[in-house]
Length: 365
Ligand code: UD1
Ligand code: UDP
Image (cartoon, rainbow, N blue to C red; front, side, top):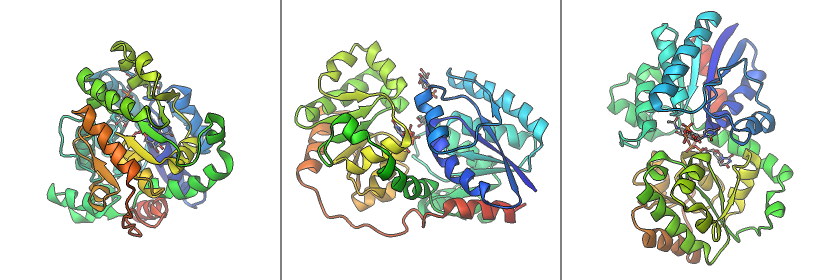
């Protein structure tokens, strides 16, 4: 029996892990022990995903919570090490690029336990992003690197990671979009609940540290969004980090007059909101791709993106959030002049990334 330990902690990791846990559940010869670091702990950032996506309850909940990078990552490292020493798994599986990812990978490699990294090889080439540091370090201590795209594979080659460790498997987020997208159609009532019409609103998300923690940038972004929200309903599930910063900068009330803030929503509601949005404006990694999966044009409020293929195809447009007018105009242009865009099949795999990952893990063990 192959015993693996999966480390998760933040919202997008619950979604990614859900697709793989589901496959593990129906595969012979593999047992998963699930560790939740507690990086995200609010019900609507954590519990809702376990319930809706039917993720098994974590075997270990470390309850680390929020803090500075050093504090949070350090506490996780300490606690994960204890779990690994006790459980002695054959593999540790980590996802994406959060502090939970890096802590899991570091704890494992120091104990000589092989690390498998799902969503390996993504790069923004911006070393000021905490996520970029987490990804680069995790990739360089991993033994199996599951890359979602050929671009990710090339990034790994460029950094000298040997070919035999890399597997191009597609994107587990695409697996999730196919599986849960159909479920969302049947089960989510969010459009009725919010009184929204299909294609009659814009959906936004903003949470990235580089946007929220710089007051000038935060103000620029929301000035741009407010200008658009004067003309068309604008729905924005508000990440707690962004809420805190808007409050701190005394902007929350003023922006709320135009942008309709809602609490973070569960995945099925989010998927339905994405599917029916006319345009999506975001700084999220996952949401950029989901916009494409559901054929919704996307404006990404960042200088760079890891998912460059969507920019090249025209589905995603990068708008550096340094000028409110530019943000507003970019969104309005997409709103009034939708374009026919190429939609290549298989860009993010064939919806079977999770199966491939599990079969590669079994082969490598
Ligand atoms: C983290 C990841 C980011 C990922 C995002 C997904 C890192 C460095 N960042 O960012 O890559 O895109 O998760 O959403 O790992 N907070 C709450 N309740 C919670 C969790 C957080 O109120 O349940 C607040 C706290 O004030 C906390 C802040 O949000 O300080 C930031 O949380 P943190 O987990 O450090 O980073 P995220 O911005 O969520
Ligand atoms: N998401 C969600 N509810 C929300 C906002 C986002 O379920 O209120 C989902 C979204 O559909 C995507 C994932 O969370 O699958 C993205 O997470 P996030 O933007 O927090 O992180 P990132 O992908 O940028 O790391």
